[in-house]
Image 1 (cartoon, rainbow, N blue to C red):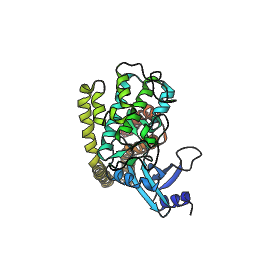
Image 2: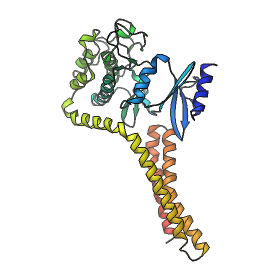
Image 3: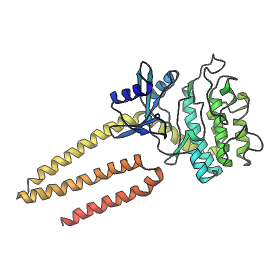
Image 4: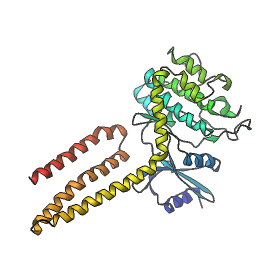
Length: 354
């Protein structure tokens, strides 16, 4: 059986409904839906399974969550959360260079993500502008198809992967990649943001940013010799401009990471509780309606009650649908109009009944 046919069969058996390709004229990655949640399905190389299994067990902050790994004899499919934002490559082309202050924000958030990857001995290996997503004013590192587990005893990677212009020299077999390789790629990304230019060759004096604060940081991050670079994401984070001012924010990020470990289960319990409360309200509305003296009055009471109870629920799901199908900027622009319409509707129902 062809891998793509087998992949579609695996997704169908797991309850995923195909919506269409994420990239035009390519069958995978594929947008899929399950229980009204849209995700991304990808074909996976068998060598990536250990890394994906680890990321599934221990999600990384500001990276897509691995929801499922579906396996068959000749096909492996991963399903991960959809980060529906704008890549740094697209944003750079649309709006030009980032300010130094904005660049600090990007660096801080990506370094926190690289810290978490480093704790699990995982190297991303393909950090580039098109693999960083701007989503709701935060920066997410996507696409772990090139990621690998670091092994101290190896001299070089078994597969040579990376994107020209962004990949460190060791990505091409000179040595084994480690977190310093990701820091090299991050340095290139930051230089692109500051200059507004994507790399066309090795970084040198003509392509390095002229910002006097950022230039030495990027030079150190992108040194050809890994021993001359920052030796960890934590070390580079400490070297960023305004690090002392950032420290309280950094601590809050760490707390949010801890919350992410238990939030999915707590969210499920909260949803069950809210649906139970909603059902109780419906039962109360029905039983209270019987207090009316005539059937006409009872029906009118029930209709009014269900309109009041149902309006927030309908608005909520309409908001979620728009969030999945619209761009982030368009959704932010119109979602409050939906809430205003909901409030007007409720006041109209209340006023109609006096």
